Image (cartoon, rainbow, N blue to C red; front, side, top):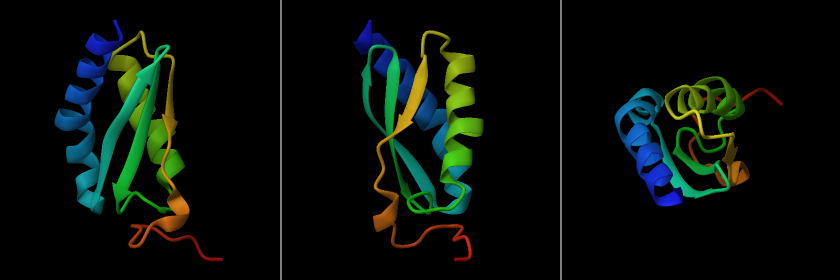
Amino acid sequence: MSEELMTKVQDLIENMINPAVAGHGGFVQLVDVKDNKVYLQMGGGCQGCGAADVTLKQGIERLIKEEIPEVEEVLDTTDHASGENPYYQPTK
């Protein structure tokens, strides 16, 4: 089941998610799928972006759950503090 689920998620990332975040210079990589939880890493303009959590929860997670109902949760494993060129930086 996990191998099949990984393939479904990877296809979705390649065909729907990455083309969407590429507009901001970002990309998403599949890290793992365990116990119906998807672990992702965000890079490029998404790494360190102030809107990364919104993109993850309202965009990526919503889409994955709609397309692959057996997915229970999508988790971000990215070290956002080390982002070198985030798309959006909130004022401090």
